[in-house]
Image (cartoon, rainbow, N blue to C red; front, side, top):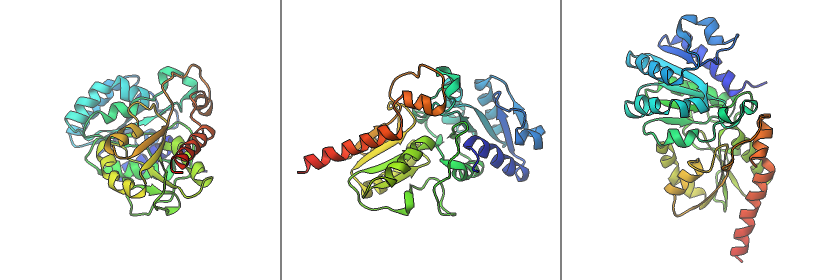
Length: 312
């Protein structure tokens, strides 16, 4: 059984910290009773409580001294509550801080609207110099954590809560900033599916498997610099794109790609602009927002049919 992204992060960071004494683990009241890093390396683990802004500021001081702090909390609290500290410490001063934002999207379904995060990518993307990663599955999450630990750049890594998925197969030497194609199939197509994050990639994989003559391009890194680097390759695949992402349309990857590729048509299957009104499972809250495989494939087919009619 695969680990969730959150558990894979904790396990991989502990493995890395055994050999890299500069790695520090900070958490904002998410430690729990069986946190592997805390159990094995208690002198380098700090549970800061509900103090997200202070956590980023402390991480900035640790980074200034040459340490590599990983700070984990709810995505909603890191990206929104601590936004000014992130802007200054990570965007402006480029401090080597790694935020691991668990409970991305509405994965903390039972916690309600205050703990949901459908705006975080747009906020972090508006700050310069921060790499944004949305890994899919255990292996890709582990690879992103390894890449972050070796990089001097600030990172925002968005994870879910308890969902488990098998990562798509990536060549061992390929970094996660490469576009990954399902079944390694890349060819010219009328409508290319682009996936971001765990739920988005799971839906996109199903659409790809149940349709013909399409391409599924999975993006792990979605910050401005990486999105710009994808443009030429994406244009070689298609002029029309269908982006699936557990985020609002405002400030989404689809909206940014539409700015970078004004000559192309970019469509989005996202979580819309409504506030989730009740607590439930991850799937239930996504369903309330209209984010599902059933709705996504209907939208995908409608776009295809539209252009078949136009081309008659």
